[in-house]
Amino acid sequence: MDTTLTLSDIEAEIADVTRRYKQELADLEAAKRVFTRRQQQESHDALKNRLVRLVPKEYGAKKRFSLSLLAERAQGLPSHEIVAALAAGGWPTSTAENTTPLLSNYKSDGLLDQKDGRWVITTKGRNYLAAPKS
Image 1 (cartoon, one colour):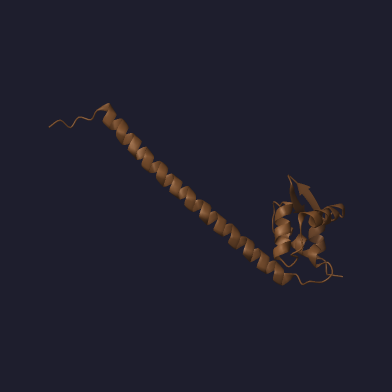
Image 2 (image 1 turned 90 degrees about the vertical axis):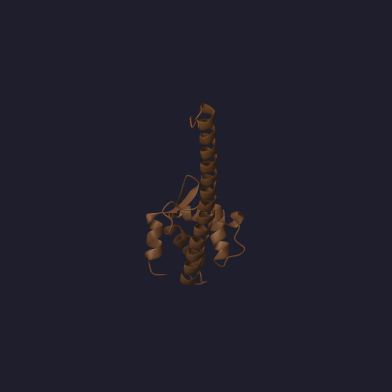
């Protein structure tokens, strides 16, 4: 009984093992994508719920909401994510067309800055949030 492996036997075994590992890797990557999406959504929902409770609808509430949202994000947020958070936070008519000029005004006031296409809160913006409402 000859148990000698040929080169083609070894190549076939390597190909089979490689195929199985590639399939396992694809399965793990798919699971990671699902987990990451779920985690991002849960994080977004928790932040939205907390901010909605913290910010009553009164004069300046939208400004405080926007600044509070950015104060919790060290890397800031792009405009479309701010618009989505505003819409979910009680300003359903928020759009890019009416929010971007508002953010630009906050930037002119020194409360926000824009870096790499993302809005970030400045020290002046943090001080505004820390100050008592007038």
